[in-house]
Structures are given as C-alpha cells and as structure tokens.
Length: 509
Image 1 (cartoon, helix red, strand yellow):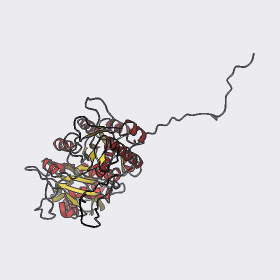
Image 2 (cartoon, one colour; image 1 turned 180 degrees about the horizontal axis):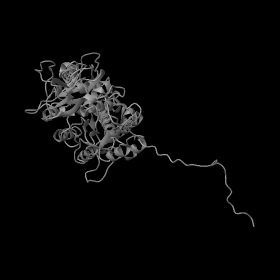
Image 3 (cartoon, rainbow, N blue to C red; image 1 turned 180 degrees about the vertical axis):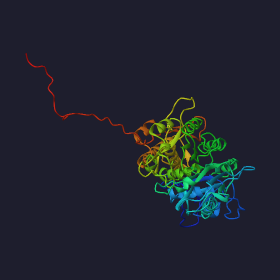
Image 4 (cartoon, helix red, strand yellow; image 1 turned 30 degrees about the vertical axis):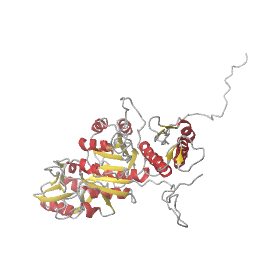
C-alpha cells in the first residue's frame, strides 16, 4: 500500500532523510463558553466607569468590575455565574443603550415620628443586605439618612440612594427597563427585629424604560462558539432575535454554521402570565425560566442557571444526567412559602415550556427542578416531546461535534472512490466512512451520550451521491441516553403475611 505525503514530493533526488510532521487523530474534548448579555456602566460614570466596548464580546478573568463597572448588571451576572461554576469560561457581552432610556426608581418611606426603641435593621436589594441601626428617638429623617448611608456604603448595589424628608429614593445606576426587576425587601431572615417593617413602607422599583437592540452584539459574536447564552433582557423583540440567532435554518444550529448553543432568559410574573408567555415560544434551543415573587431578579437567576448548565452539561456522561436538585447558589426565592410553585403548578407549567425551581422546605434553598426547552410541537402543530428536555439538544451538539472532529481528522484530505482493492492510503470509500462512523458512535455510547451501537450500525445509511461524484451522504440514527425523572411505585398493602397461602377451596360435603 503506497504511503501518501502532504509536503514531501515523490520526485526528490537530494539525499537523505526528510521528516514530515502532521497531527494524527486525537481524543475529543468539548470546551464550552458561557456568554452573558446585559448592560455595563457608562464609560463616563464618575464612580465606577466601564472599560469594555459595547456590543463586543470580551473574555472575563475575574476582572468584571474593571470591564463593566463594579455595580453594573453585567458585572453582577458574572459574579453569580462564577459562584455557580468557578472554573467556567465566561464571556461578557455589554449592550448599547436604547435612545433616551429612563432609570427605574423605588422608595422607602419612613413613617413620621420618633422610633420607640432601638433595633438592628436591614434593607435588602436583590437579596444583598444593607445593615443599619435604628436608635430610640430617631426621627424619620435620621432613619432615612441611615438607610441612604447603608446603600451607598455597598459599592456593588445596583442603585443609588438619596434621602429627603424621611423618604429614601433608590434609582437604578444604569437606565433601562431592566431596572424594574431590582427587588427591595425587608426582614428576610426569620430572626430579624421587625421594627423596621413597622416604621417604613417600600414602593417597588418601577418606571424604568428603554429596551436595547441586541442585533449588532449578536452579529459581533462572529464564528466564536458560545454553548450557553444567558440574557438579562426579557422583551419579546430581543428574545426573538436570540431565537433566530440559534435557529436550525440560518442560525447557529444551521448546517452552514455548526456553532450550536443554548439560550436562557427569565421573567418574574404571575403563574398565569408565565403560562401565556411560555406558549408563545417553540424552540429546542431556548429555555424560559419562570419565577414568581423571587428576591433574586430574573437577570441574575438566568446567569446562575446558565452557569449551572455549563458546569454540568458540557461533558459526558454528566451531560446526560438531569439537573434536578442542584442548588442555585446566590438565588433567593419568594419570601412567603405560599408564593412558591406547588407541584400542581409546576406540572401545568411544564406543559407550557416553562422551567421552574423547587425549594428545600427547611432551608428554603433554591434548587433546579426540571429544565425544559420551549419546544412543544412539531412543524405540523402536533405535540412532540423529542426536544422536551435541555439534555437532548446538548447531546446532539456533543455528538455532531465529535462526528465532525473524527471525520475531518481522518478524511479531511483524501480521494473518494467506490472501491479501493489495492488499499491506496489516500483513497477512501463510502464503506470506509461508514465503518468510521460506527466507530465514532461506539465512542459516544461509551461517553454516555448515546446508546444502541448495534442499532446505529443496523440503520446507518452512507451512500455515494448520485449527482455529485465528490459527495457522500449519510443518515445518522442518534439514540440519546434518557434521564431518570419519574419513578412510579405501586404500594400493595397487606394485613397479614403475603406469603401465606389462603385455602379458599370449598369444604367437602
């Protein structure tokens, strides 16, 4: 069998030794990036300016405060993502503001009069504790000033505070509708002194206006693969842009891009509104995270969720396992247990493409329950569970990348013939390709991503194209490993030892 060379010609006459170095087939490893999308501080911010360029992705190496500004929403997303996936590769994508945006505001109004006693108190912004002390005899103006000082002492809070006549006005440090998600709470810990809640009233953040356009930012992602994309924006226009960005037709899942990826976005609203929103979407490459009255706003929860998914779903066999019961570090759910989604509520929303959490009854820890895609029906409108859970498209992503890696390493520069009776080294046949595909699939079965190597070999189709002599077509029957999500048990109750045989034959006459 003749040996083929890439660079050493066959007609060289100058003696003696010539060594050609080229890589052989290597093991496959998937290195996934997490892309986080939101606003950064303005570059002219007097306290915490940003240095990153809007609409351009930038790698984050623990320098998110320098890149995006200490208290910016994007820096906050990076921080909570890092808590959930300490070694994950994270990229931030700061977005240009819309024209004439307005900042969201909220207030804490202290009741006029002197405080009847002293108490240690806390205001919580997005679950971050802002401690201050109320002394007996403090007036509403004095208490408001203490609240302002507590907020301003925390450099990472997403709001600025001003106090006047017993009213503390909290203003989002970055303008836009996103600021309406910021939460203001009192008395989150069960052992906190209730005095503050009897002296003050909170008006939630509202009035934020301005929705950006992420078209340019997504275009600037170019051909860099981002396997997990979490956006802090929840408006229909930008969600549609992200869905198109990840589409099977001309998006990242298209045959010409082969970049793949999965998107996450969330919203805090009533269960009925979540149901309505979920039914407006049908993409196997998007996950809609629903929540109701959480202390942690959606833009931070999606960052934590994206990080958890990247941490667990990029390598196999872990990528075939469900995410259920994994804690979302730094995510605080509803204050009232009655606001947590019941089993019946979750069951209903899981038929509407909405992913929900569960909560430890004793600690209140927020945990992943079931992570779905928004895919609910096929192109004919018929219900379809093929891509119901997030694992399936990510298994397919991993499998296609492994097939591509093997095929390009082995057959990247060869000649094609229907047969090769003399085993010429740089000639391959459709049957050679078929055998290698079976070998690759077996490796994927060993990885725990797919199952049924024998079934694959039986139903795999590889054929020389009838119209293009330089083309080979293949049909891959991918059988994904499933997740154990439901364990149904029938409990049979006996009142005496079930092994006893009861003689029910009639008595003799």
